[in-house]
Length: 248
Image (tube, rainbow, N blue to C red):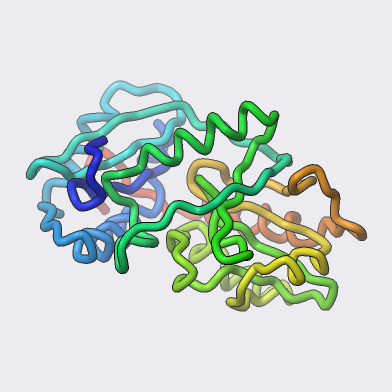
């Protein structure tokens, strides 16, 4: 990836050989919003062609990183590691100028650095903290279930990346009696929580068992169970997928 944040924009899609890629239109719509913030003008008409070429002949599930930089698309494909439960640590969130915060941009080497930090501590997840509140996780979106049964997600103005996975399951969470509200994930709210769940393209749905070695006082399984049902229903929906034999 280029070093400068305004030198690239990217998104990461889930690929399955028998289905194609998931939520392509949502990924491309978010990429366009991020590109505008980064003053980039990607050729959206050729994005699917780039993804198709990268996945040609691949027989296993993977994650496709679609990147626009230097006036062209590039793609890389890697294995997907899904975890059902994780131990998390916290680390200072990287911050950039103004509207760059919250975009998937060219200066993304920080995520690898955070992954190394997590691995050194034996952690599966790294929660990014700014101004005494959790704003994101390095590859997923944190959700909190508080002791009143309210699900909280950080507001987008806190600087986290808008989650496509969360967007696809919001209606199902609400129908199950767990509507998502936006609010700062500060120390008080985390201390009151009965569960934390991470959702994202690269991770799927994972329950957070510990944060900096501390367990939840009265842990609840409800949020993760509802998220998993919603996620699997979305993945089973034919409309979720775009065949790489031709857009639909």
